Image (cartoon, rainbow, N blue to C red):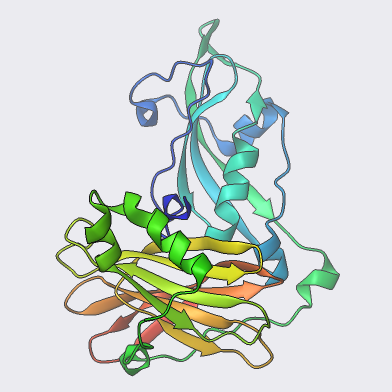
Length: 286
C-alpha cells in the first residue's frame, strides 16, 4: 500500500543482508577512512537514475554511514543526507557493494565508514529548465476545495478497500475525506485523501494523507505521508498542479513538503517551513 512510502525520508534506514548476522553497536566499530574503504571495494554497483530526478534535472550526492562485515558485505547502512528523490536508488545500489575484508592483527574485523553515491547528469539533460520554488505564505493554505459528495464507481470501490487503515470499516469510511484537485490532463482525476480519526491524527492535527490518481485503468495511490491540508498551484504549461502539503511542526512553524509531476512521474521536490508570522523558507530538497 502506498502509505508505506512515507514523506519523512530522513529517518535511519537499516538494511540486513540475509546471510550476515549484524553485531550490535556498529557505530562503535573501528573506523576506516572513505578512501581506504574505496581501495577495498571489489564490487561497485552504479545506481539507476530515478526517472523523476532525471526529469527535473536534479544532481546530487547521497551519503551513508555503513558497517562492513568480516565477509566484506554491508550489513547495516544509515542515511546521513542527500536529495530525497535520489535516496532510494542510492540505497539499492550501495546495498550490493562487496569489499575485500578488513583485517587487524592478522584476523578479519567489522568496520564502519562513510560512502557517497553520486548522481550526475549529462550536459544535455542538465540544460533542462529548472523548477523554481514558489513564493508562499500561510495565506496560501487557506480554503481547501470542497470535499467530494459523489464518488465515481472506481473511487467508491477504492474507498471501501481502505477500511484497513482503521479497525472498524464504518468508522474509517466516515473519517476518510476526499478532495478533488484540479487537473488539465484529459481522462485523469486527482484527489487529496485525508483520514481524520483518533488513531491516525496526532495531537498536533497531522493526519494520514495520500495523493490518489484515477484514470481508465483504475485508482492508484502514489504519494503518502502526514499533514493537515494542501495547496495546489499550477505552474505555467503544466498539466498537473504542484501540491504542497503543510504539517504542524511547532507553535512557531509549519512544515511544508511540495510534490510535482515531471516527465509523467510524481516526486518530492520542495522542502521547508513557514513561520507563524508568514515568512516562508521553501526550497528544493537537498
